Image (tube, rainbow, N blue to C red):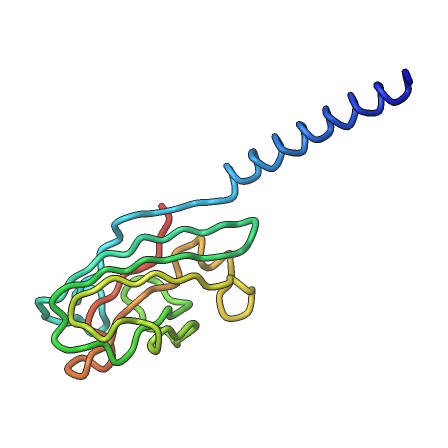
Length: 154
């Protein structure tokens, strides 16, 4: 009987420790940045547009998931393209790494949330954390991109 009490006490301590470690990991896994500005001035070449927006981004280092919410207003037309591009510093264009064109609302103002895996191939964690990816929305009047936000966690 004494062995069973000892076993259950040890099991309880181990369970508590694992839960505490899981919470500690979760607290250190997620980084986020809210209110990244989406503007035409960040596009290359720069666009003069009434459109603007914001991007909220979070990255979970443990699950390797990048979650983003973009909100936009006053696009010159409905979105015909919406992507994550990379790798590129601000002021530099790059190829599409994640295409969410078919998912985004076809509206001149709206909000959209999605999650993408940082797979180490299309999107690489080290480059993401250094700010070398960007989100943008393309319209018929601006097929190369109307508004853009660099994904930065600083």
